Image 1 (cartoon, rainbow, N blue to C red):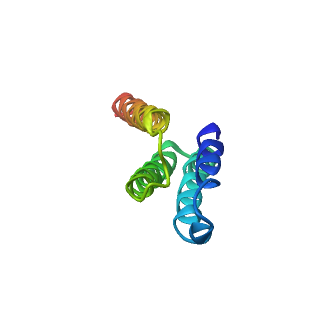
Image 2 (image 1 turned 135 degrees about the vertical axis):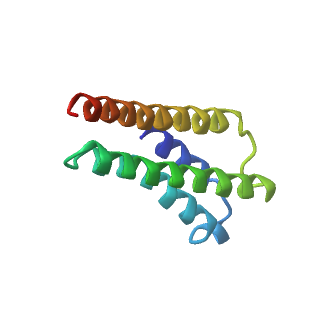
Image 3 (image 1 turned 120 degrees about the vertical axis):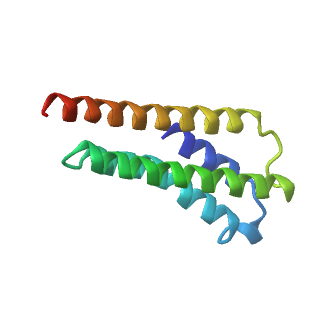
Length: 112
């Protein structure tokens, strides 16, 4: 959620003309990341959770692309911290996906 706050702070500095354009799109994609994690965690099983984690990963890729566009347009200057956040969140999501998949595979093997 701290990532979303950082995105909102970043986009608040965009030109007024981008308020309902790129800034809004980046904000929606950023909010989608923790929202999909939360929704997936509330689901019945690991398979559903993993599906929502993949959606969160897709939203993270959207944010990365859109922030890069903002950077190329000169709206986002210092990208180091944001790049680190994107990398760390991607790693955590992939780690959780791998953990859940491996855990489920182990359970399936034990139940045979």
